[in-house]
Amino acid sequence: MELSVTEINNFKVIKPQGRIDWENARVLDKEIQQIIDDGHYHIVFNLDEVTFICSGGIGALVYNLNKVRKKNGAIYIISANDYINYIFETLKFDIVFEGYLYKSFELFASEVLEKEKN
Image (tube, rainbow, N blue to C red):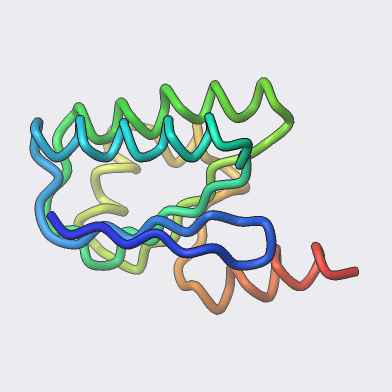
């Protein structure tokens, strides 16, 4: 798994690429926790280039979702990836992340980033 982290406005954008297996899920979780510890509570995951995600990877997203919500933050999921969307729908995580799921970065930018500017 490759992992890039950027910042746009006050949003941390995490873009993993490849497989998020058990080992990589632990790396991802540590990265998320470091971001939260640094005081960033609006985190965006662009999962377009993820080819596999294990239960540990999904668990890291949900566990940290609860942490940022306690700080009035949010986790946003961007995915045009059919595999990721299928997993989220099958496990009903589309309900957990309802209102925070976007099919493209452009859609996220127009619906969230533009509103933050105003």
